[in-house]
Amino acid sequence: MTEAKWKSCTDDPQAMLNFLHASGMLSERKARLFKVACCRRIRHLLTREDVRSCREAIEVQERFADGQAAEAELSRAHNRVNADTADAAALAHPGGAAPTPCAAPTSPCPTRSKR
Image (tube, one colour):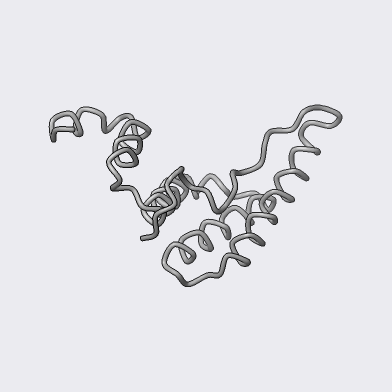
């Protein structure tokens, strides 16, 4: 991909991530930190008590990417988010299909390369 092509797709983050992944330049750590950065951009929207666990999970994700949190802590944070979102969805959609909780914490992208 040329610099011009890269700059032309800045409004399409998925195309940028696909390129980085295909070229081998997207490590698991970089993908996880990209995910954290995206979440931080909308963190101000996570204000209800039932999404506090989401804000905490963002912090754990970042620490995990930097080797400062164990996989068990990441899993616990993910489980709290799933429990909280399931509870909130049940209240918002009684008797109906609830939205799917967040994605698995240990698979930010198809690549498994380390840092």
